[in-house]
Length: 115
Image 1: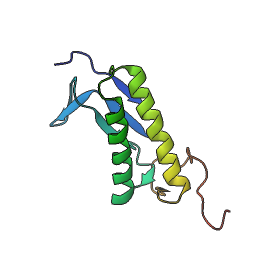
Image 2: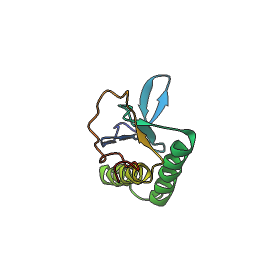
Image 3: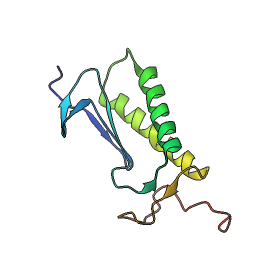
Image 4: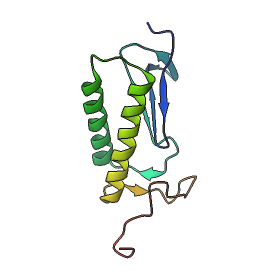
């Protein structure tokens, strides 16, 4: 069992080398836990969630067998941030108008009225 919890935190993605047990993160050498959009900045539907989870699985599978380090977690987190931005720009994801913060951190919404 791992003694140290590694983590990567970006604006919309948090990764932990841990398993979620009840409401606690327990350090783990063989499991990553993804906390997606902790501030609820976006409106998520099942399709967009599935795409992000699929991309996460691809990135984890690609890193399998390598060293699990801060750098590896940052690469995965940064890639997921970029993927979320792509979904937003493609109109597959939208900002949450009831979100705590309205700062358009991934750019202004792309709607026909604004293009």
